[in-house]
Length: 445
View 1: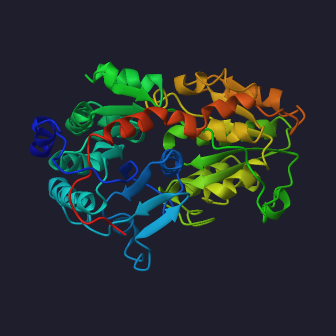
View 2: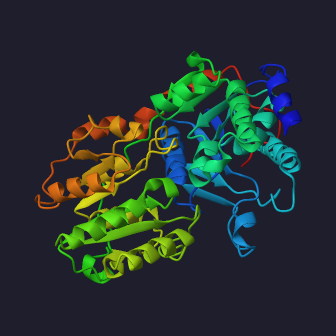
View 3: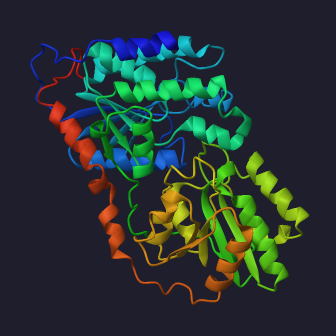
């Protein structure tokens, strides 16, 4: 991998190709690690938020998932999965090969670079943008350099820091340092970087990235929800408690959902008639409701609930598609985001607070830095002391007796639409389109 990174850093600066410009709208090849309709996690939601907003602004977006996915993660049962999807003006492309299976990372990266090179010859984009992490971005970046196209990098998180949350002993290891160096090299080689908040920007600058290359593209407000036609109810899920608190999202160790289960046990011991609804999965991919309801994280949560003698009050319907998640929010009196004080949580902003606030729900969050930065956005945001189950319990005792479904719509959220947030990306793409003509090749029909 060192040779590949050096090629990226040392390759001559991109130059416009001597090809007459084609009379087409700005076109972007967007390399991502997870995407609709195969995945419905937060990464895929942000991918679609960014891509669809750019499409509405007049950019033709070809979103390409990491070559080989989902086939190399699915055990081979994806033979009928379509290779292309069009969703809200975005063209999603899936590449069955190369696969990561049985290959060293440098070999896979070289093959993936060739696959991206072929896509560039076919689609002739004006620019290439890749999203985290550097393993996903490097093949696209190398292909862009060889084609003489500008490369932008969207840094959504530092996956090596996320890994430390799962394996603290990995911090400071040679593997950890290698990941830092790879992430930094790709970031430094990009013509522009986009990241989600000030904390991420500061970390990039600390790693040696020039401040003026970085623009903020925060997570976007998903829009005011519309009720579904076949909505779940508390009764249909078997919930009989007076109050329901819950969480909708991915089940990662740093989310602190174990703390929320412990808080439920303490509340019930104090006589509060409350149940817990956990909607999501620990798996990155899912094709619909219930697909990942028995993931390892879910089983661990249910085992913890059983040990605390509250198993009958914890409900786990599994991962649901984003459009159905709205209906589950409506079942909750308080949405809880109990992120623990891990390094990743002190850097990365989740989209969950905006989604919950769109429903007019009270949102109780730990006071890790990215969540604390949101305090001004909505009057229904409140906080407990990060890492403290006792503080979480006390704040829930204050919030649960309050009337529900009476909060006014927070119009300030409308200022955080994806259409507004992607403005720096749009400016970069449009700036390169007139002077960076598409590369040669057959124009796709």
